[in-house]
Image (cartoon, rainbow, N blue to C red; front, side):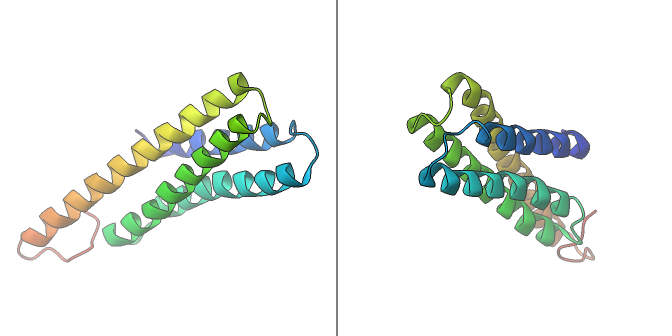
Length: 132
């Protein structure tokens, strides 16, 4: 997938999550969940943007590891929102699906980058960690 399309998907998920949290009932629990889910969704998008500017394959892999963690955390919070009935499941389900797809895409990208790094390390004269 084109990096700009993926950046847009992550941005759109962040916006959807922020809009969703505005519908939560006002309580101490929803305040905590609101803070955490906005933080993880926005961190996913911000860290992917940083990964796109990685200085090396190793740097890319490290940044994408953060994207994986944050997108999985976003999925966790969305599952919790459904379990606690803070929002209608039909409204949350598409966001949960998107967060899960982002996790899968991220894991695949990390595997591909690690494979490229391993191949580069086997070739004589190729500098370790460089992006080809």
